[in-house]
Length: 317
Image 1 (cartoon, rainbow, N blue to C red):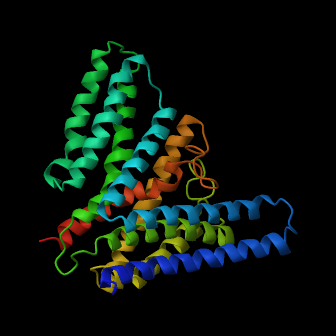
Image 2 (image 1 turned 60 degrees about the horizontal axis):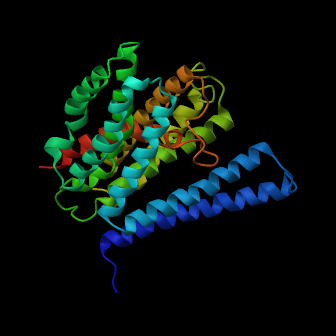
């Protein structure tokens, strides 16, 4: 059986990612043997746990890709569900918010992904920021509890915006009708995830090697200017090198990569500010070595909608 050009390109991307992970696993095993001598070592053990978690995440994404649009929509529906659960577990809520929270989980969340599944852009683009944002405060007000009402309502709304509306723009990339790129939209998701997550990893590496000056020590003590500049420029070059898997020219791929890397960085800062406000280090413990779901997706949250709309207004007639 002959694979389509889209399938061949997707396999090439996953093959490249698998090659990088194999190299990382080999390096981790070598460090464990030569440096730690098989004994517990906080830095090396953390590195290996992160690499192992990446193997699992890549396998899950690969399985969703193999299932096509339905698999991808289902995967990100589940991601949004767990992300929203993490967010709400740290938010201050009261009994009067129960109806609004239930509606967020069991009505707004599934409807948003259903609208993406049936490709109703005119509604999924405004369903949460217009209709849900109006209805949820009504449900909270009917509860009759006015204590810290504005704060509580805002947290439910912001949780939906971050965990459902923004994340849902990843599978929404499958709905874009780009001339000459038909049937290849999964590659847009791959480009977004590889570049944004690659930027996170490269910022961490550059920061560890050369980091001196903190960007925002009160929000994220580990982020440095050296890490930011080195990581973003490296990920921009990575994005330019992946132009062959996109509808972009090399310079367009570089500009798009630069944009989503910067949005990813600022998304990480915003989500760190929320964690600091709640007095926690991580959103959860769901992913070994990575914290919770939102710890892994904080950069994607801000990058996905920008990437989606840049594509829609720049490449869709």
